[in-house]
Image (tube, rainbow, N blue to C red):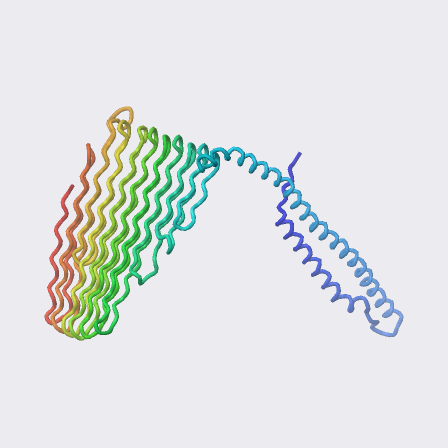
Length: 498
């Protein structure tokens, strides 16, 4: 016996289409009736009269047949429309008792633990409201609810709810990103919930919110200085797995806000410093018996320094770039886990602000921010598995920003597989130093270019892994346009090998 599947909404749409077809045919027949049912004779002779009578008779017969077909069409449309209601009523009648029965059974099962512990036995946890934690999953079975994203009243994201025996932890909520021009810091991301204590993956940590840009300086006496950019919010930590499962990934740090630009009175005001990037969060630990660790979150990119004000006198100094956020540590693998979590990459430093132009002396460009330190690679299990690679250091930016140091490689286990010892993870590469910033222009002497930044140190390893490479030194910046031209900056030093 074959099954019949009907979607009431689609059937209702089909009935409407059929009704529109019938209406179009009726309109066409009505328009043709006056000219076809009463054909005039071409002449006064009997032959012309007979021909006109013949065609008029055909037209009247067609109109009568069309009327019968219109009534049948209308009945068919009514039948389709009625069937829609019948199928919908049948579905409601069948579904309501089953749904009610399911809810009654679950309510009876969950009532004792809900009363004693405030937590159901079976069921998923509720997602959190803005900035609030997600609900815990059922003690026996159920996923944790996701944490709510932050808002203006609750800037930090809520934590994900924990699972019970079986289930995955809820994801942490993202941090709030405040409005531009306020210089407020971004909210922190919520931590991921723990996976089921017997089996389940940890929840991912929430990303940090982006810091707001700073306000530009204003005129007046005294002039209003520019305000710095807000720091990015830190990422939320990844949730740990239970006995079996993968740890949650750490949240990414939020980007720092740009610094405000200086005002442009007679003597240019200085630009403000860019906000620091938020730190990446640690990845969650893998299952205690078997499971991989979660990856550490990447550090946030730092904000750019504000531009110095343009002036008739000396130009304003550009604001310094912010420091990149540090990468998060990779999660530890379980006893039988094959891989620990990789360390997060350090965030790039913020570029220094441009020096203000002037008819006399150009302003000095701001110092570039340093790159963030790469995260440490996660350690493998004590018995089996390889350590994970560390995160690379962030690149410096702007005039003389130093690259971040690479992270330390993770520790290897005693056994990689059945035939050898586990390898330690490789150290992270150091970030490249930034090129020096250009000096400010002026009709007098041009400003000197900034010195290139030092390359970051390569990360060391632990127990057999390869060290990371040092980053390249930055190139010196060009001198500003002037009389005479400014000299170029010196190259940055080559980074050391780890």
